[in-house]
Length: 372
Image (spheres, rainbow, N blue to C red):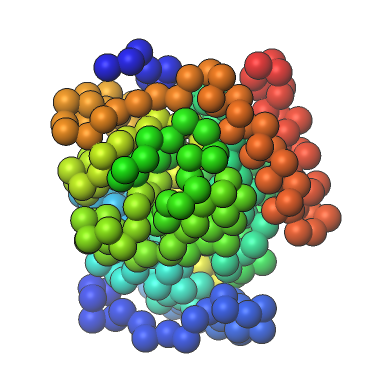
């Protein structure tokens, strides 16, 4: 194995929704619905605060629904458990968190939609899944944007620039609570090892349903096919697609490496999860509850980052010891991808605000990395 450069409620309420986000008018309607729903929830919360404050000290009786798509043995769920524990401990049990991992509340897109209209209070979803609802957050998924050092990436996301990008979620009716880690994405393929962008020619790569990810592979000379998360293994096994991109724990926990010839550590992008709430619901909460959630987010993201650091080497080793051939791009190969991908950034920017945010990110990344 090559040396590695890593640093260290229920299904009954699933919605049959029209495709929110399919056009701007539908998005606006959905966002408005979410705000109205949140206001109604807020009224209930305030009534509870008046009638039940004694039960939880300064906190009202409140039940928070929190959904995500990752399995219970994932770093993401470790963070969700820490979030839950902090909320319930600090509130004396007056505020509780009902966790729904492993896509129990529907597909990734359905969970975003349900949060937008107020059926789910808080969700943690990949930025790529959110970008069809809030286009400007697509910058998070630009290839070869972030530093390869994971701690430097966290530093940029935790900066004022990262916070400003997070506020863009308000355009979709969400309150951005934080960036949660999923790790760097890797390429996996059948029949073709990847060393440079031209190696994607003739390959069809599975992506999430996100225009930026689809455009990325087409820009590199390949093809992309959106496939639902729950169907990825079968699509790989049956040859519907030739490969896919995901972080180590997703590849390992879902056994993607068992139906792929190559696993290529490429550092081309990150699986960044956005922790976000229905905006109307969150803004209608008492200030002390908002602060409680904010503090719990800090606890949760730290737990997720720690768990990710502790498990990635284990997953990497297991994949390397499997039948799949594991490979890490060389510095020269990375430079080729970076140069072509920087050109893609400019092709993908579609408005002045995105350009402004991208330039701010470039500046912050250069400051954090020292121009490395």
